[in-house]
Image 1 (spheres, rainbow, N blue to C red):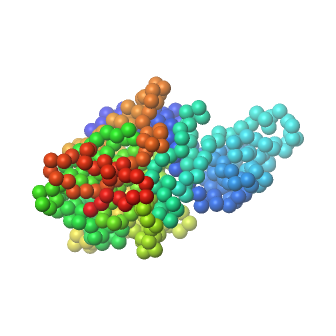
Image 2: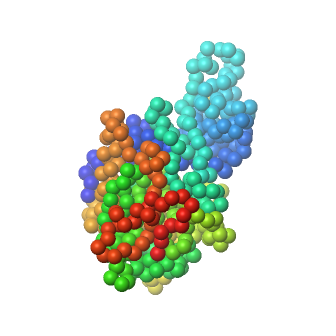
Image 3: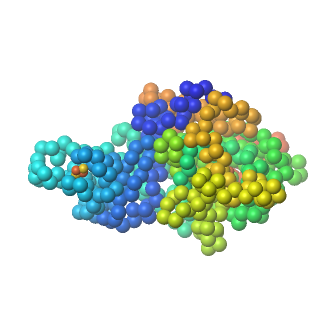
Length: 427
Ligand code: FES
Ligand SMILES: [Fe+2]
């Protein structure tokens, strides 16, 4: 259970909020590179941390991420003309470059004093791993580019998707930290999904629905270990890194690619669930890519032309009560991603955590909340904040069997902090 004050502090990320201040210290995924592939192509609306923005690629290939609304009389620059190194408002022709500077104000001529004064909010962008990342914090505190592993593997080893999730980022992210739900909610999918099947770990998952959770600190955030009984008097450990403020990496199964998420607040009642599969050592196979593109594993199918999942709250996620009854699907909702999203959205746009009753398997969640609040307060006071350095973000998930007297915090380091270009440690 959380106090109403702490819940408010954790979930609000708009300008001037405590958690908004923390999120503004990190590079965040803003949109796919392919959404603005073309120079002088159509601009794209981007809402992040409660701020309405528009992204475009200018004639020189530079990316602009600027305030959506024209400084003149507030027209959305989504309607803008992307031409000759700037975005021109189609109402009265004011034009802005990628830094947000007004570079043309036709009603006062080329050298008018007003033009120089007009500047929209603009945030720096970089492209990494097929994603445009932005930094929305104080310019003097801008960290080095992200070091997260999936963003640095060659393009053929990675598949990135995003979907709109219609709830606050925190309840979505908490699903990524809580691996105890896998034995229940995803039990059907473990047996069937092509990106999950064929792992001994699946059997351990299904056979032991009461994992012991143990959480270890690391410089980038938390390592959340879930321990289940395995054969031969050993334990099966699944270790999920949570990298501040909003990355999770899913432990692998057999030789399948790793899964990762970034939970990025759009506003307080919506978030982007970025979903990534990657293999650190090999290219994804045609069959794997096909499965990912067709919404298997952690990906979804979409309402055409949008990032809204085809199964969504307006159609009750196409729940199938017969499948729920027979156990073919534990909740009756098809697909791992929408199994999670349907239940997280069902909590309401912002979960009321003053009414929850946490149990021992929620330890990772409790510690992540604490770390977020501590870091946000530290940031506000000008003290050091974790996970700003690329090196602190270099960790991957792993799954392994260990003798009962060996703890993951010492005996899984070879899997968690493995060099690039190596196979995941997996069961
Ligand atoms: S509202 Fe944009 S130029 Fe007038
Ligand atoms: Fe899940």
